[in-house]
Image 1 (spheres, rainbow, N blue to C red):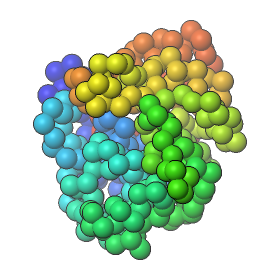
Image 2 (image 1 turned 30 degrees about the vertical axis):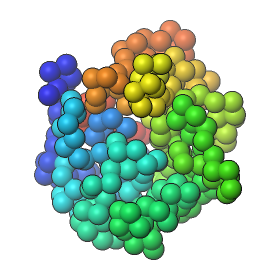
Image 3 (image 1 turned 135 degrees about the vertical axis):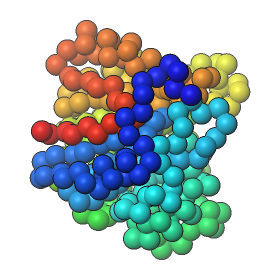
Image 4 (image 1 turned 90 degrees about the vertical axis):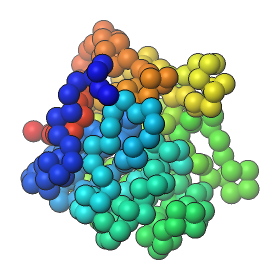
Length: 279
């Protein structure tokens, strides 16, 4: 594992302790990458897990950085859509037990079904959909529809199974795109916010991957062209290293951004590295 990638900075109890001990003053945001599209964010004293992928699945090139039993401090746990590397079904009940005060934020279309199938108390789950917002633990979370290769929509309710999430708290605003391709209207929706940070998948898509059931995301060029005109404070590429058959190129993304959108900063995260936004 990790032969082709940089060494893990922190993991296990050391990573959890780093999150607990990190002081995040007003106007700042702390971030830790767990690999794939999985992050820990801390705003003030509120700790958010976004798409925590913690199952030791065959084929992983990056091992789980923490076990769910160690996650005793989560205030909010978000799952952008019901794929194994985003809503990690085997570990969500353990996360619920370890962090008994945590609220789970999921697509509203999936909320009741997930509560039954996980199982997890539906009272601990908040459903979001395109254009809707909720406040949890002092964090405003808004949703925009994501097009995970397809902009799927329930024909009866009009709700979406894939979401991107916008977080506003502690004087900072950031966007976790979930899994999505560029679709008409996405950039217009995002113009409502001025982002300090955007977290965007860059693993792309192709016919071979789709034929084998690997549903695609933005290419690195599309991620650049979505974010660049919005002029965020920082863009971080994600979703590119976990599985050999679903790669992406963060170096190409950064080089393209540097040429086309030179005023927009980018950063390539290391696993378990603490990053402070707003220092």
